[in-house]
Amino acid sequence: MNDTHEDTRPQTESEDRDELTAIIGRGSSDAASKIMQAMHPAEIGDALEALPPVRRRLLWDLVESDIEGEVLMEVGDEVRESLVADMDLDALRAATEQLDTDDLADFVQSLPDRLTTDLLSAMGRADRARLEQVMSYPEDSAGGLMNLDTITVRGDVTLDTVLRYLRLRGEMPRHTDRLWVTDRYGHYRGELPLRRLLTSQGDALVSETIKNELDPFDALMPASDVARSFEDYDLVSAPVVDDNGRLIGRVTIDDVVDVIREEAEQSVMSMAGLNPEADTFAPILKSTRKRAVWLGVNLLTALLASWVISQFDATLERVVLLAVLMSVVPSMGGIAGSQTLTLVIRSQALGQITRDNARDLLLRELAIGLLNGLLWAGIVSLLVWFWFGEATIGLILGVALIVNLFTAAYAGLVLPLLMKRFGIDPALAGGVALTTVTDVVGLVTFLGLATWLL
Image (cartoon, rainbow, N blue to C red):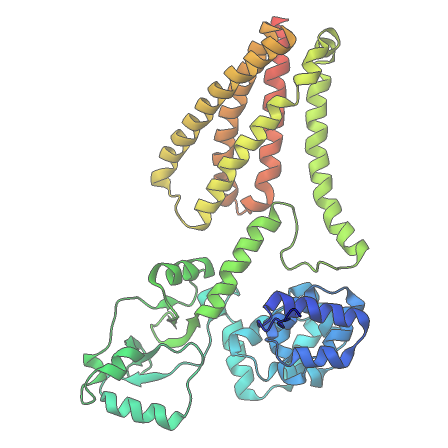
């Protein structure tokens, strides 16, 4: 007899989500409820986004009311909008009670204006004042990311006094790795790491123990700069001050992770003209309208390339081989330009490109484009010569490749720099502009040389 052993390994997050979506598909509410009890709100949010609208509504009805707010913060804007649409004011208010102030501000700003007004009116004066303080700053700034749940201490008390104070509080906010030291007027004076608090002599003053290695964040500091500081200094939390240097809140690592993820998704999705917050199962007509705009832009660039080709129809009629090889030049230019474009957009996001080094980077990319052009021009020219026995056409193709790869390197660097200067997102518009340049330059060079030499 063969022994059988039951697999007792704990299920992964993806396995829980897949099982939950499968159970919902079979319509078994009781089994789904049991699985959800052991799932984190983020896992439930992933499961909601992975379901079509009808099944999503069935799963949402099973979410416990005390975690609805957390689950709503884990889904994209379009999914959240569809779930909130059927919630009344009482349900919305209950869903927001457990949210931190920064999460609540994000949630409220994603609601329709009517619901935002109703929800703010239903809040207590103190909660509304805290929320309005965060909402007074841009969403993509340190002030928009900050949480108001800070623990502050004065510099003229001992560490033993601080420890007694913390014990009286009974608990500390999440992601508290340090306390903030302020003067009697609330001005920021430094930080007191918990590890120092626990390992230093109890009779030492806070002012003798504080650190000032990192400057506090100005409330208007861009969220991307905040994220970079967290990455560079391995921060868990950081203080936020107003124009007068008064401590008004703190940014924590959980919010910074969201910023980093959103920036990554924005870069990838924008290249296809899509919204990173879009619902995968959004209504067909709604998605069609959004994508149609981007397709229309690409159609215009394709028509421009077709117009360029039409100007050389007499040459193409005489030498049919040109039509066979014509797509090679713009294709190679597009790939080479995309490499430079991607590198530059990434460097812009990391703040690595400045006026001082832009020229050096340009020369570097032009050199790479020229060397790659020479390499592949030689290879392609020889292939055309041996394959078709046309040395002249091989030479034309090679020269066109050199010109287009050189141009692609230049455009891949200059276009995102110009777009950023004029406030245009390079990730959104850079690809289309680059494709237009490489197509037009490549075709004009290739067909122009052919017309001249043949």
